[in-house]
Length: 336
Image (cartoon, rainbow, N blue to C red; front, side, top):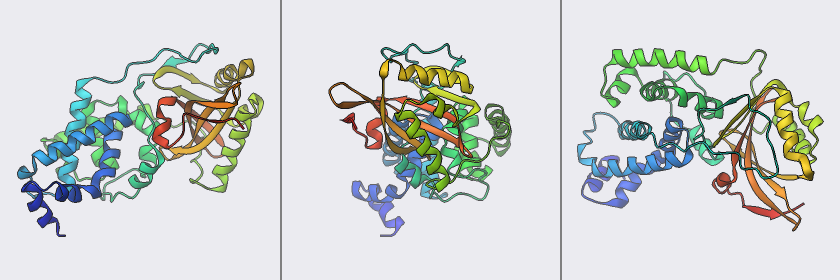
C-alpha cells in the first residue's frame, strides 16, 4: 500500500496502518536512541515515547520532509528530554562475593552504559546513510564510541550523531532541532573536538579483525580457553600493554595489563571456574559468563564484551547478569 494511503488511514485512527507505516524504521530509531542514551533500557523507553508522540501528532506531519526524517526529529527530542531528566542509573557498589578487587585506576563516569544485542546491530548496519556520514556503521555502535558520546553535552551529541553518523545535511539537522545552520555547524565543531579528546587512539593499535573472520575466531578461541582454564598467564599474552577494563554499572575502571591481570586472577581465586557462552554485542565478540557451582549448575554472573586490535585484546567490558536475557542467554546451564 502507498505511504500516502497509509498516512491517511493512520490519521483516521487506523492503528494497523500506523504500525505498517513505522515498522521499517523501528530498529534504526531504536539504535539511534541507544547512541543518544548509551542504555538499552532507556532506548526502549525513548522509542516507545517516540511512537506515542508520532501517533498523537500525525496530523502535524506536513510531509515537507520524509516520514523517516520526521520520526528522527521526534526521537531526538525524546532522547534530549531523557538526558535533561537526569534519571540515569546510579553507580553500583562492588557485589561479587568472595572477590576483593584491586584498587581501580579511576572511577568511570558512564555507569549507565549497557550493551546492544547483536541482532539489533545487524539491522543498524543496513541503515541508508546520508552523503555526509563520516563513520562506519559498525564503529558507530562500538562500546568505545557510544561511551565517548555520553561525555558530550546533549545538544552536541545530537548534532554529531545526526550529521556524522547518519549523514543528515546541516539544514535538515537545523530543522530537526529548531536551530540555525550556523548553530548546528558550531555545535558539530565542538562535538568533534570533544570526541577526539575522549577517543584519543592508543599508539600502535591496529583495526579489529573482521567480524566472523579466521583472525577474530583465533583470538576469541584463545581467550575462551584461557578464561575457562583460569590460566592467567595465557590470558596476559592476549592483552595489550594498555588494555582497559570497565564494568558498568559499577564505576571501577582498570588500565594496563598488570592491573587487569590482577583483577582477573582475583576472579579465579578460591577455585572459581567459569563456562563461557558466545554471543555478540555492539558488533564485538561477547560472552555470557557462568560460574560453575557445586550442584552441577553454572549460574550466569555477567556478560563480557571484548574490544580487539589486531590479534590482541585492548579492552574488556563486564556487565552484570541482568543483561543476559537480552541476548537470549539463560540465567543458568549445566556445568560442562
